Length: 225
Image 1 (cartoon, one colour):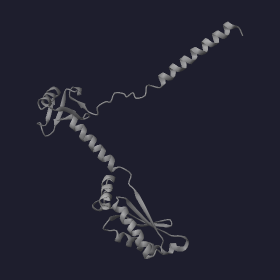
Image 2: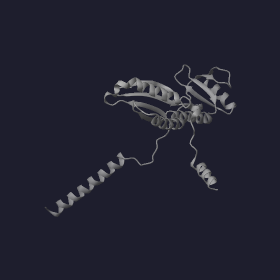
Image 3: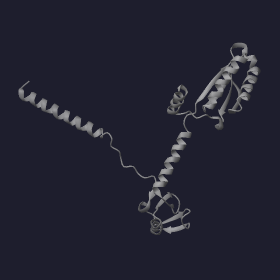
Image 4: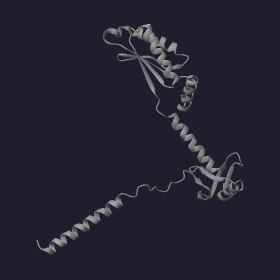
């Protein structure tokens, strides 16, 4: 292979390498780049319709030209916010938009907190559970409900013990009765295969909120002193 041919191949290889690098840069935008975040509502001059229906406590409800409604908002030091764009004409409110957004975010956080996964604790019995074992598990169940967890108690039937299903049902009903101050029954005893189960949810008034670690440490120090 001649020197000229080798030089051409090296140049061609370098060109392809640079081309590949540029292609990767184009495919991978810079990290940390965030596109423009659009507001969920049209506000003030961004409302581009000739007429709007204005509702709310601080204004006479009715249909107004957009410019007049905007002027009404400005006179009160507030914003004209389009809350129902698909209505004819679109529905607007005269409110403090910053405060409105804050309240909306607060509501979303509250809904998200309520939608968090519920903890379910399980307690297992046999159809011939004795009083000592029953009371031991009853104390655990009380603590679970006070912690705010749901409770699923079940009787597991092995082999021929399935003939004692009535005994298992009575045991679960007695268990629920002992816990009526701490929880309420969501599902009565129900047989599924070799298991009969009952489900209870905690009573809000009986849920004990966990103390912060700092307060627990202070209590421990006071006891030591």
